[in-house]
Length: 367
Length: 67
Image 1: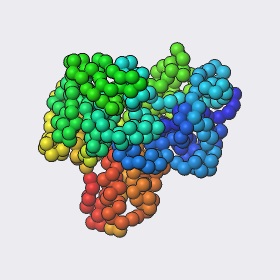
Image 2: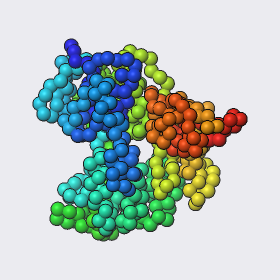
Image 3: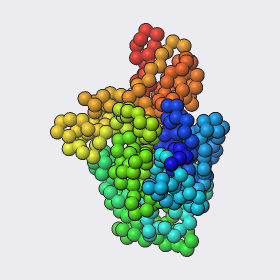
């Protein structure tokens, strides 16, 4: 037994857990082990400000280095974890070190899914880390033609930043409209028209069948036979929880306070399949409380937000379960609200250009 | 200095935008807390920037200014 609390992963859930532990008076040894070389930083700007402005990456850190020293939090950066022994209560690091813990938070986040057909090319980008974002910004600075594969929020934000930077941009999406699986096809079509009106070429109901080039991809063949020349490709087709380091055992079920099936081992953030900023923030804090044996705090439903071409898009609830949608406002003016209902009861709300309606949307869902 | 800010604790996820915009008014603890006062324009800007829309602004007569 011994050696305090260890947090594996250095994202938002890790940071919130560490901050909450110290704020609640926990004086145990506290270590954060992180594969990335940077102290915990905020990721949402990576697909927004960091793509648009050189230097924006310098403002991402949640805390200055000094804060970790003041709080007695040890940062072990640039070293991935490579294994967990829940019986001996040790974590093995990729550099061979074996570290003991009393309590552990698994917060390794997620990895972008890759497409086998594009995997071997140097100019194919994912967007997860600050290094990814800086590399993509540098690549886009040369202009040229960009193909974005996947019209999720990351793909849409990248396309928006690229086309505004003067890059000729095409989105290739397998569904008939962006986000159609979540919001339905008619709402998805609004996103299609939004991007088209800004000059993005939208290729829908189509996938990348083949890629051509030596070293760098020079053109892609789509499933409809169409050929797209490209200077850069961004793949934004979702993420998978980063659980490979846990081996075959995987993560298993995770409780409301982040408890795993191994006593004293907790999980929070994207690694649990949660998926978004607010859920990662709340799960990190909830795990800290659970580690200290405190009652959980009731969590509000996590919301999601995006900024596209200067318009704020917010979503709360579970629109996927809806059987009916109502649109109020003026979609053409980027000012509307979609209420998703199931059996007459509101289950989700999407707001475009109407941030002031978010409190009433939350109240509607809680009613 | 006539506006008052209040935080909805059920809505705030401690994004921290308010603290960046108006550090004299807001601080992030478990969630954002109001720690002082500041120019009306900054308080309103902070409330508008909040991705969770967890900040309500009222004027000196108690009337809702935002949201």
